[in-house]
Amino acid sequence: MSRHILLAIAVLIGLLSFNSCGHQMQKQSAEKVYIDKTISDDSLLTLVQYQTFRYFYDGAEPTSGLAPERIHGDGDYREKDKHIITTGGSGFGMMAILAGIERGFISRDDGFKHLKKNVDWLEHADRFHGAWSHWINGETGKVKPFSENDNGADIVETAFLMQGLLAVRQYFKDGNHEEQLLAAQIDKLWREVEWDWFTKEGEKVLYWHWSPDKGWKMNVKVEGYNECLILYVLAASSPTHPIDAETYHKGWARNGKMGSETVTYGKPLTLRHNDAEKYGGPLFWSHYSFLGLDPRGLKDMYADYWEHNVNHTLINRQWCIENPKNFEGYGGNCWGLTASYSVNWYQAHAPGEETDHGVISPTAALSSFPYAPEFAMQALRHFYVDLGPKIWGEYGFYDAFSIQDDWFPNDYLAIDQGPIVVMIENYRSGLLWNLFMSCPEVTTGLSKLGFSSSPSKND
Image (cartoon, rainbow, N blue to C red; front, side):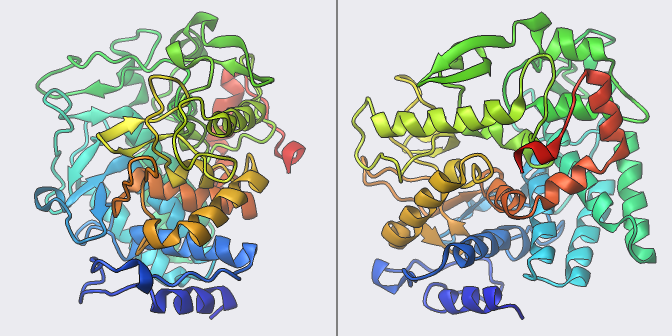
């Protein structure tokens, strides 16, 4: 067992109190939370990865082994939803499992068994033209409607899931016989997704939802710029049901209207999305698509994606430093606005008078390690050393907090926990970027869309 795991276990001794299943945490008083203020940066990164990885391993939905939509640290799972898995968050979780294997948190064999359980279950869960829904009941494999008309395929969540599945395929494709069979099983699922179906009979844009009884009633076009770039990359990369380049340029890029000449705090943003143009929107836009898609040196006619993501991150931090709304706690070591829980349920937190609600989401800064490592580490140390007794729990940092409102809920969301593990790993080793970008189909798809990539440029 590595020294990092021994350290993680030692830190956990004073922190956690488990039930027999290891899935619930009894509420702790602040005095009982052990924080090691002398921990090195490297060991702190490992500890955060380990603790957060456990959301997807120890906290997994029992039947499917996939990621529960949410876990509340005081044991309140919102009883009616405790078996609801989230598709995109499960893709993020699969990548976190791979990082866990590489970091020695679990053995390769245990990781393989966990991921094999995931894939076996997904193979028999509800699918629509090869695509999964946003939420699925982990016990039955049946759709859990996300809303009244969203009770079928969600092609964006499917893309987030497939990003993880392809990383798993690449990880095991040259392994032993059982591992190669798993890779082939994933390849079959990949080939069965009918990406082109979601152009709604050939329109030059992808549509987010399709329902077997409501059809295209949701009628949401997936247009840039936001978190959905990975959808168009995968759809163009499909060996069986691809979209053409025109769909990318006319649909996603909106005939060039996705471009921008905005400069904020001296940082140019070459991509825009409606009223988020000035500040770049919530930070998950620079995370979700780039868990596997390597932004280092990634360019097309619209942007240098590394430069854009770095600037997006720095603008988000600078807004928190300047703090025009005078929220308590904001600063150079306490920053990060993105979609998360909020004082008023859930918000897409972002810089701006209407979108900043005084809520910091740890995933925003921590998933930005590749883009701003020095500033991300400052935030990590502040979150852990100074705020740890209030925001650190069984599965790592809680989803969000507000010093302004004295609001520190013990809640987690899969889609926020996953990027923390994955992007820290990409910062440290490039593991998930290297795996996903090793897919030959992705290379072909990116070339079709006019991308060039030179990862070594920003190493």
